[in-house]
Image 1 (tube, helix red, strand yellow):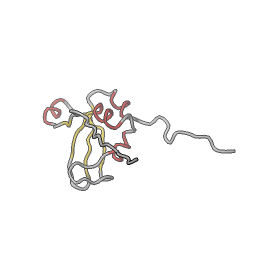
Image 2 (cartoon, rainbow, N blue to C red):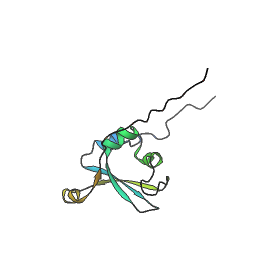
Image 3 (cartoon, one colour):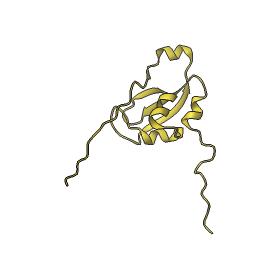
Image 4 (spheres, helix red, strand yellow):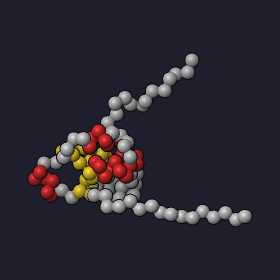
Amino acid sequence: MPEPYWPKRKNSYTLGDAERMPGRLVRIRCRYCKREHFYELGDLRVVLGNIEVDDVVYAMKCSGCGKDRTLDVELVSVSAGDRQKTTVRRLVAIRYLRRPVWRDE
């Protein structure tokens, strides 16, 4: 008898779940070039979808060195004093590239 399908992780912690906690940011740091950026949870959820927090590293590349699989993700609660000093990357727009595909008949 075949084994039934079960989710890989039960009660996984998604970006939508993390967004419910106010005042939290995502800190993404590259282990290779040591760059660090802070993101809003809602912006990442719009771009990547409602994926697990641990899977964000597989969906992004470093903006400095361009490497993938070198990112560390951490949810941080930033105090009000530190929030004023912290530079947060915000989503401005999403642009789609339209390329025509032609067929000769």
